[in-house]
Amino acid sequence: MQSLKSEFPIFETARKEGRPLIFLDNASTTQKPQCVIDAVSGFYAGYYANVGRGLYWPATAASFNYDRAREKVRAFIGASSKKEVIFTSGTTDAVNKVVNTFLLPRLEQGDEVLVSEMEHHSNFVPWQQACQSKGAKLKVIPLDAGLNLDLSKFAAMLTDKVKILAITAISNTLGMKNDLKSIINLAHQHNIKVFVDAAQLPLSEKINVQNMDCDFLAFSGHKVFGPTGIGVLYGKQVLLQKMSPLAYGGGMVQQVSVDKTMMADLPAKHEAGTPNIAGTIGLAAAIDFINSVGVEEIGRHGAELRKYAVKRLSEIEGLTLFAKDAKSTAILSFTMEGIHPHDIAAFLAEKGIAVRAGHHCTHPLMQKLDIAGTVRVSFNIYNSEEEVDLLKNTLVEIRSFFL
Ligand SMILES: *Cc1c(COP(=O)(O)O)cnc(C)c1O
Image (cartoon, rainbow, N blue to C red; front, side):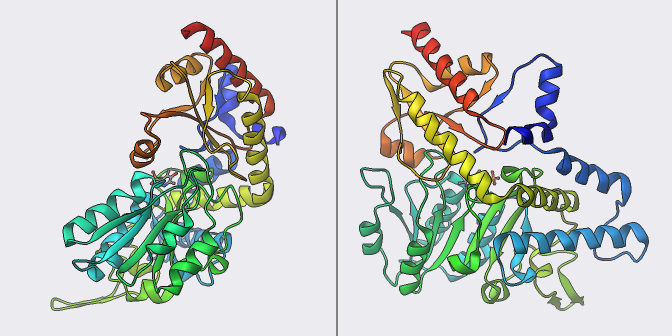
């Protein structure tokens, strides 16, 4: 895995500038390999034009690559058709689109929507606001003492009032992984649709939406080595077909007259306006990169580093690790007695160690834990055990500095 670090030019830039960079904030976003940077600039420099319409050569090349990107995403998530792959600007955008065009038209007073206590605000606030606007009820699946989803409480919440379950695959804050297959199976027994927030999933395990049987799934390009501003909404074809367009405008229509408009077929129907062409081309390059390394390898490396970090950080007095035993994810949170998470992050930043401190867009989870925030480290293929050792030694230094 260390040989792959050289594919990420930021580390060479850092070295040349004499600034160390230990990047342990991968749950927030990932660094970009040269192939993704080249794909984006190659599009702008080599065959830039709008997609879908022009018959001249840069337009045909742009359209070809745009279409190929969708095919790559389809294969990447195991969808049965390209029609089920809708490009969005990210996970947040995808959630909002499903809330606005799937949930809201079907939501009535007294209905319920289920989310969990570990959701990112992006998979919490949109559902909450929708419920409030319709007099529906947002119900929050609690976590058990081990910080896993309380499955027996969850089972008891499944009634015919529930319109949709929105659930994350992996906690972006503490790193627990949900058993989506059983959760979805249970929800479907009650005819409940399931939206999966997969923002943290693609580098942990191979996604297969058909095996998982989710109704919707979303992730962001920038968390999987791709550009910012591009994301994916997967939806089962029957549902996407029934849904009104996520937005109206050019590119998503078949025929327009003064009186009425015929919408285009999937996926165009849900993609109004000029899309983020460069983003999709960069995402396709990121997927090629991931496939060349192997999702299993990437996932295993992250999980091994987490395990190693649990072992090393446990040696520090007064340090509390959360969801210590969470398996096969690359995210680990901790607090240190008597030292504010922001002070820890600031001290680490001085040494070039990039971590995140705070609530990680999960206020409800922080309320559950009764803490203001954590320090979160999250690993990727360019990280190593030596970096974890350095993190540990610096944390020991921090402890003696502050206490
Ligand atoms: C990052 C993240 C989001 C939000 O993704 P954006 O790219 O900011 O839209 C949502 N859910 C989880 C679990 C995340 O980690």
